[in-house]
Image (cartoon, rainbow, N blue to C red; front, side):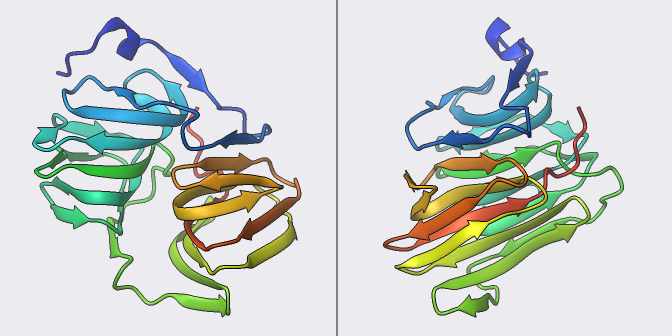
Length: 231
């Protein structure tokens, strides 16, 4: 069992209203301790206690840190941002994208330290496949001279992809019928006139206008759709 303090056990509901646009710029939220020594996280959205009903965050593992064996009853997906993230299935270095389906179990650790962008409890129960993709070696699709895309996962609940924006990229008056979410992996973007550096997270409510620019270029994780909502 995890050794949790009172704060870690407390029920949290944070940025859980999908009808509300949320913008979090790098530095707005600090990394805070988890129940495991050497593992910290920066929460963007969360519903539940330590066993979350939904969570989106960045998680950092110091060298030789780990999390005890646990089950993801509603699945997880993550993108490795730095270092190497490991579990009983293997070692996943910077750029790997992984989806572990509902009811999967693992004991994650890192020998040299790592950081991941991770989404918990957002997969439907009938999703059974494990996905492991090295985005560095994958074939990206060129949309135009200033944008390339790599599809990560597509289902009735979500369209998840990575996008590379070249310097001077512009997309005006984008509108989607579902929630639009973006996490800045590297570089910087401008959304509706506000600049967002790497590690910024933006979730825009369905139907709202989006003006998206990148002056110097960026790589972003993008999801259209809320995923499967369990709460």
